[in-house]
Length: 310
Image (cartoon, rainbow, N blue to C red; front, side):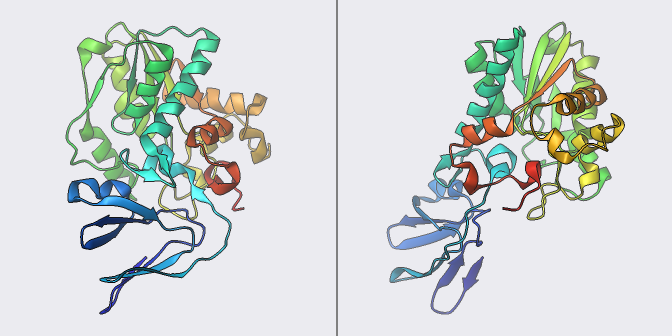
């Protein structure tokens, strides 16, 4: 929150630090932004990041620290996995590097299982970094089988109506048939929220243009709970993982059975793979995701995966 007064600006970060607030500086000027990537093109350099619950006051005399709460830190892990801008850094950790490390984690799993693909591709834009990390680890070619038509189309999962989400998704990606036909393709993406756009606008089109195999690799563990803090997800029933649990007749199982590797978890993933129509599907685990973020697990908000607010 920013509060403009006649004497200066108050800047306040939320009490658990789920979202970020950063301060930039250049000669004679201070700036506050939610993304560190806002600074370089304006000539500012990163100065500091507000701590959870911290309140500061900025004016021509500089920065005054008003107060700092000592509450438990719960940084939103989804910021690094999907919602954050690639050029940003949150709590000292680069978004792009987290996604590359996550892609490498997915490649290590496939190398262990002996998967051999012709190429790896990311779903633009945020899936690209996962594909880079995967390609570097697996030592297979990175190709752009899907191109973003224009940067003008925003995040297709955000609009509240299905019609609006589908319209954006349909228009923003263009396949390159020459790179698809006859190829065993690893497709990397950040997450599966609902899954309908992924199937209709990516998977079905890759099959249409002659892909031999489609191996889907996802940096975000299966989403099991609707986010109570942001617009990442709105209801539990819309989540692909929850639908798969119901369709596989596993609803009697406790939710904890689907959080980590188990027979129930594998059946859920198999059902999601069937509904998407892919050759195989592998998610990064929660432990691997935390390792990729490089922050203590107790400092991260993992509610979307575990359903625990503390």
